[in-house]
Length: 376
Ligand code: CMC
Figure 1 (cartoon, rainbow, N blue to C red):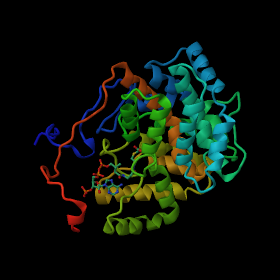
Figure 2: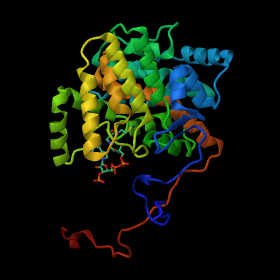
Figure 3: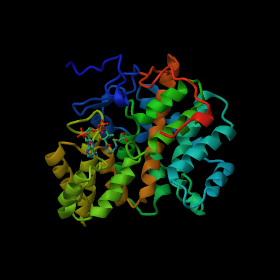
Figure 4: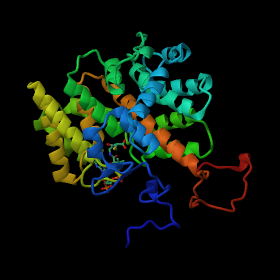
């Protein structure tokens, strides 16, 4: 066995099948991840969110003036139309935040006044943060929160998400986690975005499809599911027992496992360190960190499955005072930049994405009139 997929057979989940050439990013089984050629730790340590977004979109780190004009372009477009906020409010307090954002993005596609492709994409990139931060508030009838003019992109999202005062270190941690969520080659939502782009549908349509794909717990929904699980377990001493029962019941442990990373997810390693450092600097209770570590140790010992980004990003968001239903919305506010990079790359050398399938059903059946049909 070579491990290469047989091209004549359907490959479940497209595992191991390359469906595009890309210059945007690449994750590898050895635990490496590059953004436009830069190792992820190089970017996470040195760059800011806006710089990283520019890099992912344009292929090169910006000069000072390029960064200024990109940042200003986002600032100018951050205001969400009252009509869109009204539609979000109409959905009511029980609406799922990702459904709220998806509906808002669809509405935006109908009323946005942006004329050209770049304007439309920047409008989505700028507004997605505001939609994410308000996806829980506005449907509950609370007043919307807006970005402030002189803040960094990540500081703005954080101040819209929580009223808790964060330290400078905590704000930098949030920015770095946002950078880790910005792009990740052909994950399910970016693939979805490329499939929609290949039909020549507009970026609003592609982003709303991306949001639909992001919602599920096997993808973007995992950070919320992981946090709910950690809140249920509470005590590091109970991690082993929890996992034992879950394995017996054949339940998946949210925040663990990855299609590409089998040894470790480099983003999870970085976030684990940020969480540890953040709680150490506070000098208070580090139970959450110890619980995560206990889960990680036990999962590796029992299944050799490492934690992924969502597992360690979730407790960081929690420690920053962000409500759990906003974790997947944060993911969308970051990933919109990656989605748009994939949208553009798809269109640079477009061919309609229309794969083949292997038909395994019956054929040559004879039509039976309805009165002659039987059950079974
Ligand atoms: N808990 C328990 N068992 C697991 C887990 C898990 N989280 N992940 C994989 N496995 C087992 C799985 O049961 C299977 O075992 P067996 O061969 O005995 O049937 C084996 O590992 C292979 O799993 P798979 O689901 O076929 O592998 P995959 O490459 O399709 O899995 C995954 C990738 C992310 C869907 C899966 O690991 C999973 O469901 N994880 C939990 C959800 C999650 O954390 N998702 C976030 C992914 S990273 C961020 C993102 O992209 O959004």
